[in-house]
Image 1 (cartoon, rainbow, N blue to C red):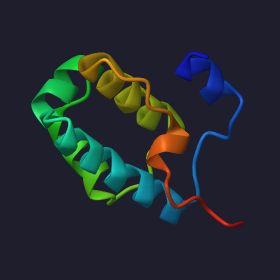
Image 2 (cartoon, rainbow, N blue to C red; image 1 turned 135 degrees about the horizontal axis):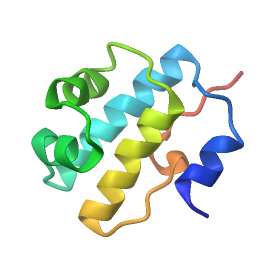
Image 3 (cartoon, rainbow, N blue to C red; image 1 turned 90 degrees about the horizontal axis):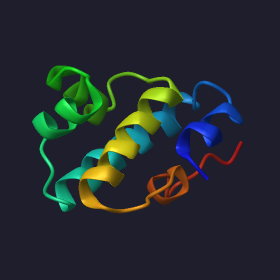
Length: 93
C-alpha cells in the first residue's frame, strides 16, 4: 500500500512525544543506511536545515513530512520501511 494512501487514513499529526521518538528513529535509520541529510534534502525537496531539525526532534512535523522523508529513505536505500517499523515505542494512549 503506498505511503500516501496510509497517510490519508490517519490523523495529520502524531502525539508530540511519539513524533519526537519517530523523528529520532528516522535519524538513526538514516545513519544506519549511510544516507546523508543532504541526499535526503535533495530527494524530498526540503532544505537540509529542515531535515536536521526534523531529526533532532525539536518540533512535531505533520505526518505528511514524516511519510515524505520515509518514502525518500525507502527509495534511496531500496527498502520498504513503514511507520510501524520506525515507531518501535508506540504511544500507549
